[in-house]
Figure 1: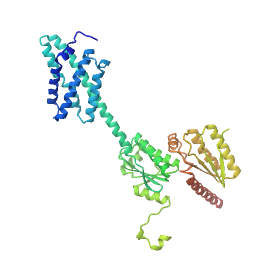
Figure 2 (figure 1 turned 135 degrees about the vertical axis):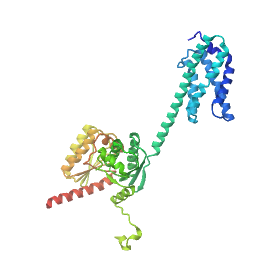
Figure 3 (figure 1 turned 90 degrees about the vertical axis):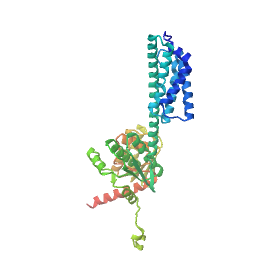
Figure 4 (figure 1 turned 90 degrees about the horizontal axis):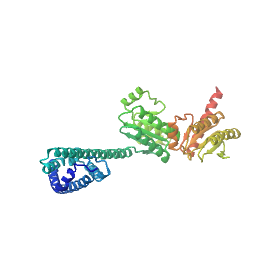
Length: 293
Length: 130
């Protein structure tokens, strides 16, 4: 809407160069030390932003930045903050890009409207609202892109952390490391069952030495995995239950009595070998004739 | 009407489920299979469900009850080739099917069947002596 206080856009019109120059100085003074190339880039960004701001103000200077007139400015800021989030800028550095514009803008307004105190106050208020809105937008999108990074890393971790290894013909092992939650256990369960089908393994050992905490949900998931493997015709052993975890499981009232549990992966492996008809013997510990028996 | 074929191999019956099971088909299979066990005096039943992709609680219970019925008729049952998704579904449905014997493929299923029949036979002998 065209309002009477179009002074702000007028100031941008007449004093664009001044504002931009002062702003760039401001940024360099407050921000971290920049290389020449970085400074050049920051200056280019500043000029672009002031230009975008100017044209947006000409179209709509109500202080509301949610409209279509401000789409260009918003896009610019979202892009800038997500790039800075990825490049490892702090939130303060990112937000101060916008907030450092305040001072040059105010002084430009003062120079323009020096004598008219009332108009000056109104314009300064309008400018403050505007810059605050833009600053909030910057912080918000910075946060969002940081969260995206975290989500992506979580997903990568999920894929990395559930390897199914083949110990022997027909024997698989699944060493679990880190905290188990529902999503991860689901992936673990699926990976294991698929590996059982692929390798036609009769035995699968789930080793939970690296799992720091077991709660009812995790125990339930383990039981489900064991039951599902059994339905498919494979036998599941669980190894590496630490004393604390054994205590927790019993206190929680989880019934693991149907599942074969062993102290260490080695013990479970030995049991699996024995059950599948293999025998591990030390070569020199037996008399020569016993080997043929 | 659609039917699931039951093949006789010596003292074993071989059932391969190649289509998605619906309830009526499962009931027909139950009828046919119990009839065939009695007719051929079969000692073992091998059900291959490797092509079965979808399963509900009814089919799950059906498999379990087929196994129990076969047991009453003095035949052992082994279910082979269950897909991971099917296994997960059955577990999530709360149907762990404890009484049922399973194996990864037909070959291993045959071995399991043989040892199961041997075991059952020994049990019977032991009872006979006592």
